[in-house]
Amino acid sequence: MFEVPHSSACSRRNACRRRQFRAPGPGQEPAAPAAHKPAREVKTGTAWLRMRWTGNPETVEAVTMRLWSDAFGENEAVPVKFTKDGYNTSPPFGWDGLPDGTRELALLFEGVTPATHEPWVHWLVYKIPADAEDLPSGFKHAREPEEPMHVLQGSNGLGNIGYDGPSGTVGRTYRYRIRLFALDHAMDLEPGLDWKTFELAIKGHVL
Image (cartoon, helix red, strand yellow):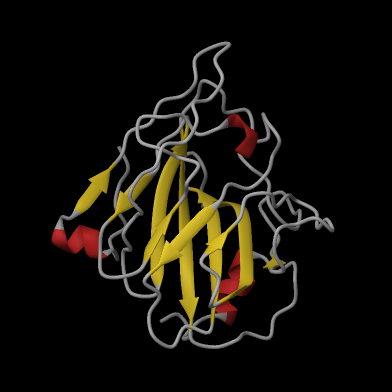
């Protein structure tokens, strides 16, 4: 099971809700995603969706803002296509309940397996319009003309700009965390920022 961040409303209120997922067996195709309720946020301005590859999104309950993925259904596997063992394309995410004053959004997909000294960034995407209701699937680690919407992507743990999913994970369990940030300012940022640079840039602007 996953630990809950000390800063979360969940840890203060003991209000976590966990969903268990299984990995596909040898020779099995991943199950089709099932409809499920959106995740609830951890704290105002930052929604969290925690999961592990082998299929374990964990949702953490808090105030108003919600984050979810239609690709991960209860008791179903995370599709291989979202990892480097498959098509290495980003999964879809949706959200609602943004706080008043949101000017734009950013999303961070990171690995939080204890074996790594720091969270491993798989995807950082920012300059998401405040009126967007979701982030479609289909982003990769290099910009392509057919990418589903115009946003900026940061540098991931491999040094690539864009999305690089988990790799070498078939039959193994890893933990991941996805965070959505609601920002009170339209940030003047360049593409390709690493997480630490981006985190510093948005300091004081997360609602």
